[in-house]
Every structure is written in structure tokens, then in C-alpha cells.
Image (cartoon, rainbow, N blue to C red):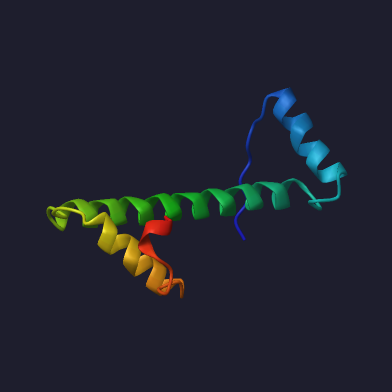
Length: 88
């Protein structure tokens, strides 16, 4: 495992120490590793969302929406196809 030294302003150092004292982390390294893992996960979620947006935009025009057909499909999917569509 590699070692990395970082410098923190006193308020940030105090914050890290408070997190360790709370018992959530055993030491500074555990806390920083957790922050990095969370940041990596957040970055991956953003990348996935951006790809979905790009795919959607490049898929072309969605065309006109038929809200009655969408509601009917949703009711059928929810097992509510026996309900009167005027109930909505």
C-alpha cells in the first residue's frame, strides 16, 4: 500500500479527528479511504447518468406523447387494468 502525506487546515484536521473519536473510523487513513471510495462512487454515478443523457439525446426525437396510452400501460403494468380510465 502506498503512503501519501497531506496538509490540512486546523479546522479540517479537527473534523477528521472528531470522526475518528466518534468510532466510525479507526484512524485518519480509514477516513480518507472512505471519502475517496464515496467520491469514486459519486463520479461513476455521474458518468453513468451523463452517458444515459447522451444516449437519450442521440436517439432522436421521441415524437408525440399519447398520455392516455401511457396511463393505460401504467395501469396494466400495475395490475389495475380493470379500473375505469376516467378515475384518474
